[in-house]
Image (cartoon, rainbow, N blue to C red; front, side):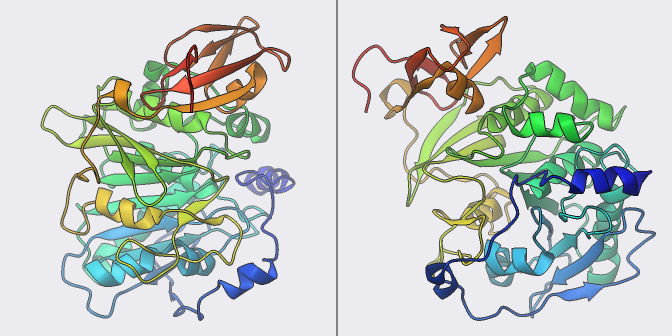
Length: 409
């Protein structure tokens, strides 16, 4: 039955919405020389999810090193994700092990992690249990520190990252969800499509309860969570970044108004941080301007550069792996210092969008109730939820939208 459902899921490209395509001539030129092959690991556990385990091990891996689990998107492979995401650059620089989990066409013909399937997204079951076994094996075989395990992934891998943070909060100290989806959103193929677009709007309390239900009785501490999402993502719409924020700030007992805001070079990615009483960033949201569905990378050899753009869904922008490594505290830091001083929300440059109410809802800038659209954050009534009513919305601070009444850049 599990494989039958997986086969049905495979009939659609569930986490990316479109299969990867052959790169253009220019894109091929951007591909760096072939990276070193990953090391395949067998017999890492019972493997109930029928996944494959690979590792990237730096030449000088220290004792009690951290471990980062990396999860590819649909139609991708572990090697492709390693070659393009840039994670190995920082593993070599800072001395941590990267575990690449890979799903197969036997699980899902499009090689999507089955983040929406109950047999794979529950504690002790299927793919989620297999990945947990990989982390345990990394400790026994490579001497990694079980207290410093992190997980990140793109799209379907991002949604599976949400699964692992909820199902195994005692295993993962932190996670980074790239173009992903909140835990507990989809329960089958049809609902999973709705999670991707137009997205699902729930209260922070409802989202947080879904996480708590994944491991009843767990008393914390909860993983820290970084969220990365492109402003122009048409596949997993930006509303999901807002819902992920709502989910994990509520889990941590925090409000949804950021404590710090800043921008990151080189492309003015807008960062919002949600901080605990002891000053640690528990949740951060990074909204990447001008990009669609994929992992932001910045090819080059500079200290904040990484990755390659020769394959679709790795988009030239900002090196997200650099900032994710910093968020995980793997370069000697725990909480990222802003790259420029925090500013009060009223003086931060506002971002503006002019679109129909339908598009505002689809992009996550508004919600819909009873046939009407409401601006996210302010709750302003925008009128009927359709393609005919148009407004310009101003975003300031990040995640808070109002109808623009004056000048808007």
